[in-house]
Amino acid sequence: MKVQNTRKANFFKKIFVKVCRVFGYEIIDQSNFFVPTQNKPLDENLSIQGKKSINLPLGEVKISRKVRTLTVIYRSCTNVGMLTQNKKRLFENQKSEYTFRSLNSLISSLNLAKKTFPQIELEIIIVDYNSKKNDIDQMNKQLNKINIKNSIISLNIGEFEDKIQKINAKKENITENQFSNMCNIYKSLLIAKNKCKDLVYFVEDDYIHQKEAIQEMLFTYERISSQITRELILCPSDYPYLYNKIVSTEIFLGSKKHWRKVDETLCTFLTSTQILVKYWDKFISMCEFEHYPFEEPLHDIYELEYCLSPIPSLALHCTNVNSIFGLSPNINWKEIWEENKNY
Image 1 (cartoon, helix red, strand yellow):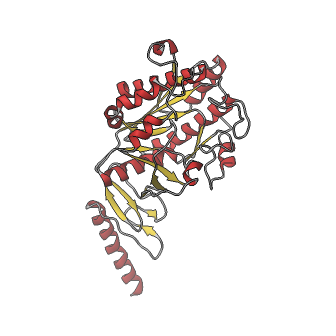
Image 2 (tube, one colour; image 1 turned 180 degrees about the horizontal axis):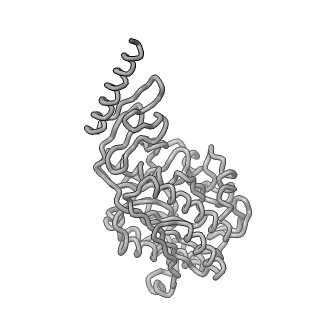
Image 3 (cartoon, helix red, strand yellow; image 1 turned 120 degrees about the vertical axis):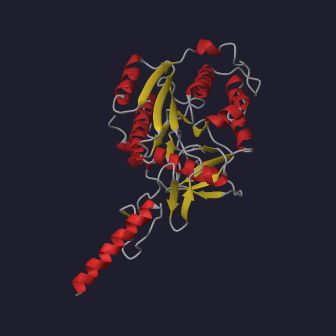
């Protein structure tokens, strides 16, 4: 009789689970930390892209802001060490090594995102300035490992010769490296405005990403944007400068990370084409005149829109170890650096 009762209970349980799935409800078996409606352990990602974001014990957020596409615009230049400093970078390698490992980390992250978000159209565009042919060949070789749309564009700085002021905010001549950097940002912004349909991730070639970085940013964008009914800017790095002063902030819950409102970033960030068009003149002003700090126009935008940064970090900016915009705390970056050496 006990076996029959167990079978009967299991039968009704299966029927109940199926009914819950039909109506979009989730049920939790807290006795074994399992979600029968998704057939997943409770500590796995329970969110469904474009439909709902689930984070226990806070429950479900209905997604009203569905991500449709993501274009990654990767700015590369293997011939320039540090843009504005003579100091050595973390790990003290040639600049090309950072470019290759950074790209490798992005490719790994995009491959994971493609599996998680099969309905989101992904693309990566490299805007390269003056890298050696062997380095371009290496980047092409790496792109062949990813099953998403990709391309490499060779930057022609002559296209922007008459658009960029040669004297900066300090009343000094801008350097050749800074000029080419401003041209690359300018070109990236134009590509985003003219080609991108939804989200765009502008990223420099010295950021090493965790494999889950793109996945977390996409889930988080949908969740938080749906909650506050606004477009966002997401920065993948938890910069050290954020801990140098005590300031009030706002904390949000993403997919697997906490996110806080910040008012400064460098030029690596993810946002929407809506934000890009809305503040187009501000974005372009960053390329036409060297402000001090360089990212001042971005900071002006952050006074009006939500810019969020993860805790702990999703990406490492490979600058000098003492830089306030460098080594993000409480992550084993040496391990992640080594993981991306086989490109």
